[in-house]
Length: 228
Image (cartoon, rainbow, N blue to C red; front, side):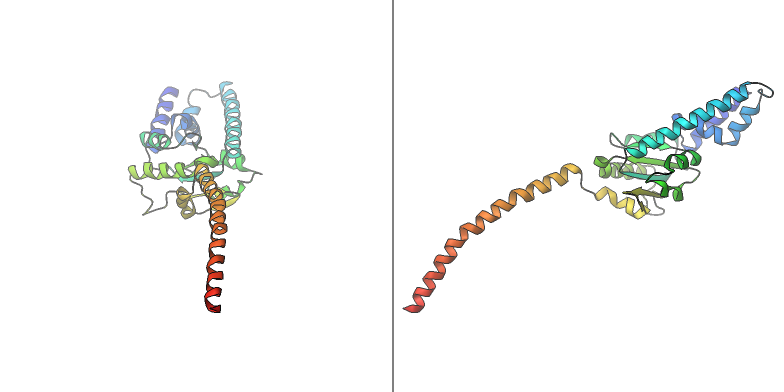
């Protein structure tokens, strides 16, 4: 019975698009997981052991979340409801190296963002949120890849927003704000623009200085003509 309950939990996970790493967490929060946990363990010391493991796992997930937050320039939440496991795998594959996609239960995420610059994310926590943790040098690539993958899944963001919200530089982002992040230049592009500007300054100065004697000569010549 216990094994059957676990199998039922796994099938539910697949139905809502929860990846293997988060399947056990989803099962613990669902009715299926709780029913399976009660079968065959009544009066057994195994229930207390299971509860202890659950607390340890929750604490581990909270610490993992805090570490991801610490290394992220942008955190964005989206609703994964209706996405299959295969579709979620496609979303993860679309993301550049350094960006992390994680499903967290509300209580876990609430604890992870508590007393951090990301505390305002509490306003977008919902029952089926998945989070993108994006480093500074991968912002544009992340959201371009994500939108392309979601479009392939039948979600183009036109009928309903792709994101429920996010945060950047301790400021909350609307779904529209997040959509525009794909237009941000990368660090390499910014450095290239700055270098180009620095290079153009001496050149413009040299051209200006070179033209001064010419203009002066023309002026002197005009004055001479007027005297004649």
